[in-house]
Image (cartoon, rainbow, N blue to C red; front, side):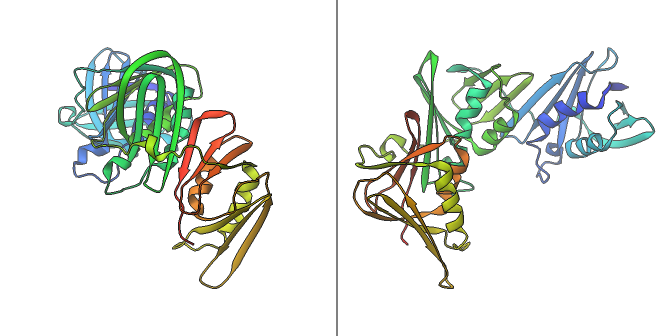
Length: 367
């Protein structure tokens, strides 16, 4: 039975959408596959890793029959990428899928569609939010780098999303730094907080476009669903209590100054050359009119950078993990940043001048 007859790119795009979450190694072999369903000319593709599920569809079916099967996602993707940009057909015969294009032909094993474990959708979704894709993508991009990776405090391995009144807030922390970003919407919502897993955030950043087309976000008690373009992404939520970010963000620091983001970034990149993999500390000494950045390593080598700044606060001698500073400076797109400091033992606050919607808190370290 012929499933698909179309141009290569018309099949490659939906396949790329769903194959991002497919793991190479699985306890269940069928999870390395994608589920392909055909209903007339409508072809739907679905993948899952039990935690996250992505589905999409395209009008590229051949013939009127209905059919369903599962096939290895990576092999099918690699074959299509390697084929020339021409017509491709997918056929199903005796539990084998044949991919044909010109004089190239491939036969892949399939597994029964009935055995494929799909994620059950929540029956009731509470908060429903609609945002332009570029807005949600911006919100995630502003904080994603602060998420923890494989932390035993599993609730840090994700992003806190808060809808509250007209605000949609994203917060991420790994216990050493915290990023906060918010947007104000036309809609108004009852307060709701959920922790979205790291993998889901990474997939959303990959799939969301820089357009004003809407993404509809539906939140249930244990699940979140994103609908946009021809894509539906369903994800389990991380259970647990996220730290109270309002207590972490410092208020009323009196030592403040602004500095060019690019200028500070280049100075820190140069100072980072003298740090080691084991110790990423840089020392920052603030005095009226100047900022001195220095780093040393076990071989007694040293880097020193001196910057002129418009600063008239207290003298502060403080150390930071340079990676945490580079992460935020590389991620921001503004020309100037503002830095607020307490003392050597207090966290620093990095913000964007005249923009209360972004805050980045970084803990000091002993140098």
